[in-house]
Length: 493
Image (cartoon, rainbow, N blue to C red; front, side):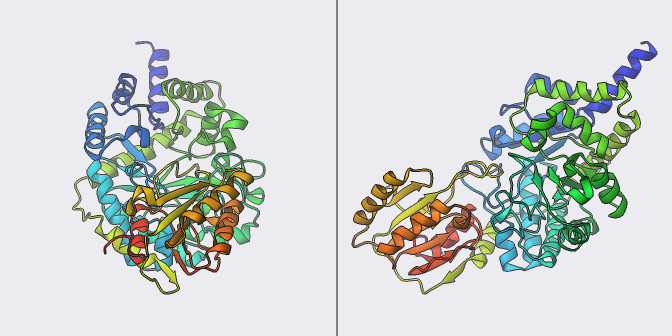
């Protein structure tokens, strides 16, 4: 082999060593097996890859057989954001519920149980927890994914969640640095801006990341967030000032920086995925997550872009070497941690969900209840995961009203369900009604005719109408739904 060919081979291996692409099937495609055999860092799994625990366990075993201890990453936050339980809903309440309880020991135990589940399934890196301080109540993307709006509370639960996950041998990834909680936009759709001075950022948003670092977090994910005083016109995910300067330099983080999905429009619309990948690595990112719907072709394009950037002198080869070395350290840690003793058991998830429920009023026995779920648009981070009280009532006692229904059609639908509910108990289930004016309008119209109705809020309880009984679950996990159903007598404790 010539020196030039050897250099090309080495450069290709370095590019592979910083990539965790997805694949669009429930078995390992030949191209993925081949890439793992050549040294691809690993993969990112999504709901599309998962049919059952047994299938997932077999899939991860096949991935390990194809490569030497690959990173097997998944975006499993529990609560509203679940991949392993996308068909039924998570058995663990999300961060907002844990923050409402504010028992750091419980948070650590819940995340340890979640970590044990992931480890048993063959997952080595969880792209969680979200440690954003949710100071904007109408934040369209964080919401119940955050432990709360108080910096100190979020910081102590950030440390607890990292400790819990990693005690099970699964690497944690704190996100979305330097903090997505004050934004008014969803970075899945467009570039979000954090309108804060560096002093405010340090006081409000950074302490949870510092707590996660002190707890030994193995990875941190920057957000596609513009912080003008820090990053100028760039998102933090592509900003050397944010990643190399602030995160590596000022905060002293030595672990792996993992990109958020590069298909997100905040960066993909501006640069395209391959160029965004190059800029992310230039800025200090070590491991590239390409996003859910990308395929072999995009993996090859990103790999070629990284190689091309080094050949053209745009990026020193040492930057790829440094990133690959950090990823190798992560892979060594996950291989060693795989043999740890783990304490699983989803029972703790239900116990936590029960503790999180807040009740305003005195529950009364329901008479032939009619449950009305007011359905908002799907959150892009959560996707379409079952939620609500439908599992605990007969199908003929459940009605769903979409917030996207035209006004004249909605008026007719409300009139019809009020007639149907005559002589029956009425339960209205909403999800983040404060962020969806149509949901609040529908609920208010029903309550005007039925002030005795029960309202169950399965998002953040910011908008609180006057009702016969008001419940808040701080999330829509399956266990949170069950906890509410128990309070209402729809499910036995």
